[in-house]
Image (cartoon, rainbow, N blue to C red; front, side, top):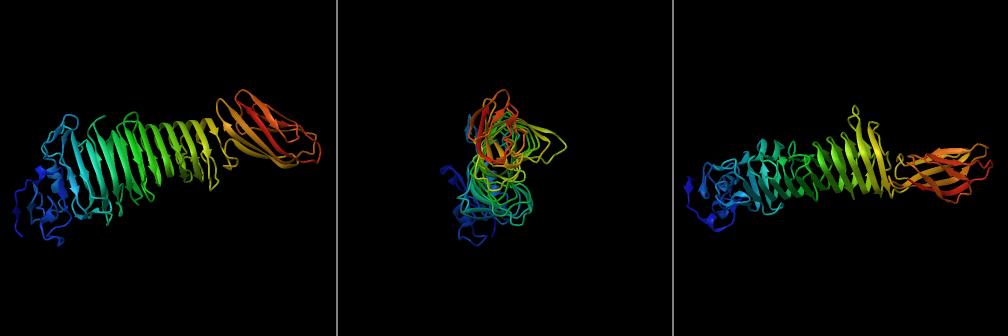
Length: 459
């Protein structure tokens, strides 16, 4: 087939550029590119729609569509140049060479918006068989939308499938990703985004060990929203945002750069802190791992709300440095299906606790729980059902307690009261007194056994 050029004005009459995975050259259609603007029949490095090869495109027409998209002169005072949106039709797009979405002849000082959308992640599949990075987005493009397609690397020859390292400063860039699927992963992060001011990521699905790297513009700048899931054990690395909210099914969330606030909801994973975070909120999640929360940096305030924990809760992998959690707040740890240690890290210091609604026996080594043998027989179990700066409450359970001596028994609280402690309930039949540091049980000096509870409240 000789090179052909057919003048086309279709771009002026529709809101987007179409790219087809089907054409004459791959035997899937009896018309050029199955009627789309670009596709497998497109001339290599074509400058406009409906230029046909050979030589044929190496990217099923995607590179050529991106080149043409960047010729757009559409301009918005707010968004700058708006490149022609690209619509990938249903089918398998075979890509053997790296793709670059550039800015054409525009000045790098301008602002640019790009939009690439498939026909659904089960309908549109970009299959990359090349090496290196599959798709690189120009650093000067500052408003990006990617959605509704699958991107695969069957030979795992790519380092990254989509890469963007923004050159724009604060308040100047935004990233939106939704309904992007990956069935055959890369050798490293599937997607890599750096210097992002605001990002919204929804329904990103991958079985890869490394899902996404996304870094903001500074720990007191920018916002990240990751909704729904990264599926089947993917690791996501984040940092340098003022606020980040993450939900979904992860293997691990890794914080590699400082953040002001991190909110984690409805996840099934652990979290590693390799950089400091001012405030951490984790709620309605299954925290798994050994430990589930790896503390390799200082945290000012961390709150766990209605979480399930498997294994050790807090630990560190860098035991040569000491780290601090200013306040650890826990409100409910439910449905614990594997009791483990509260902490296995002697180098992680917790300055203050704020515990509420902790079920008895949640952990074998909860810092507010203890079990002590009676002098002769039985046990005394202490459980701080609430342990806050302004209010503390211990429920102390006596089970078959016996002290057949004349010596009183003193048992310290796992964590002491600050100023005042009073006994507000006692149905054990024993004489018990308290201080801010513990209780003293007057010796019955008999073989009688005692059971019941003692309640101590104060602050």
